[in-house]
Length: 464
Image (cartoon, rainbow, N blue to C red; front, side):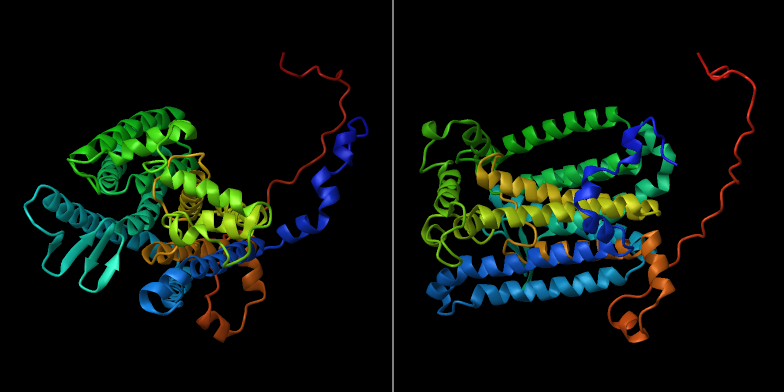
């Protein structure tokens, strides 16, 4: 019975009064799963549409077919759906087991990528290739197969990091537990990734912070990580002048120019130099207005907007779909962020909770960095926009991560009970996903008995 002296206790919240249907839908056992599938599916559909819009004219001019780029993107989207399906079916124990192998493969590929680039930069080899293996910026080609090892490193760090932290449990609060083996592996990964790609290193840093935050690590650890991270970023920026990554010893430090151009006022920045990308992105946003110029009718993407199908595809969305289209994309990413953290909060297994937090932090941080760079709120880092930018490895790895989140959503205690209470037909479980394991039965708590009335005065036993 509500307390009559407290009117707030008897009155439901404003959100429950205005949105009872939304609260009813969110209270359903599989609401997290359907929110995840719908938001990520819509983002993927928007990405395919915008990639075709951004590449059709250029693809026709280069290959004679306007569908060349979108066919390539659709192929990787299909591979991503296969990766989603596989990861949705894998149990948590399998994911924990394969995590160290995925991370180990990523470290080997990153070391090979950096080694070939370093040998080429110092002149030991004339071309960035050794036999059938060759590199191009962030891409490593093993014969006809090309991939970005940094994308695989994100997935490996999620699985291996969540497994290590879940195994350590409460002892993670001690520095010696963090130093064996989490911090050395993280430091090595930061160096290997940051040598070529500073933006992906920042995403990895956000991923590690999300993992440690979900594990309940003390704040002084984050302070130390911040100091070490800033020092590492400074060293990587300075290393670009010596030829690290895509820099050159006889050219300007492009990483430093991106930071300084971001901090300078637009009127004082060289429009033909480092500020060219920022100015063209702002022009696309200005041309779009509220409702955009229309899908496929944007002109800046043809000749002026750099990397219109990849790093700056949000500028194409701004020009063609306007503020309304940008709001839809931001709303879908917000739903994805809410759903990912909701899955983490509702997961009873520590590994699932940590992995869900890390995946959500990774995707949200990458989207924020990309969109912030396009609109001029953050420095440009060259990161793709998840689900939407053109690319192969990034899209496949992102869909694999969403498949793991979908598996965790089906394993929520209420969702698992509902699925096992009314199991789907066998062919559905074989084709789509097996039934999740039932959580441990809830133990009934001790029976609550109403205390007997006492003649002692009220408040006599309270602590003063």
